[in-house]
Image (tube, rainbow, N blue to C red; front, side, top):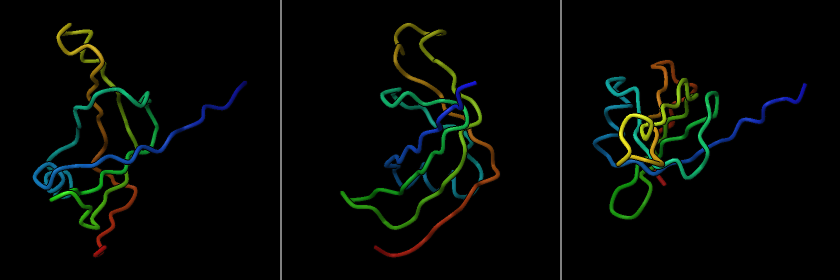
Length: 95
């Protein structure tokens, strides 16, 4: 049996959405599926403001990938990435 290779996806995230994830209020992310997201992949959300990273990032595992285009043809190529509130790690530092 061939092992499944998991990917790590680093994504820029605006401050408002980042804070909602940081606080545990947001557990999904709507994104263009230009990276081939899969269940179990690692998602690293990096806060991005004024064309630079702030140093805050959140790392978690993708728990579900929903193909939004299946339900709405206008959204073809987009997915809803779900992740659990249990974060793998939270990092905050100045860059």
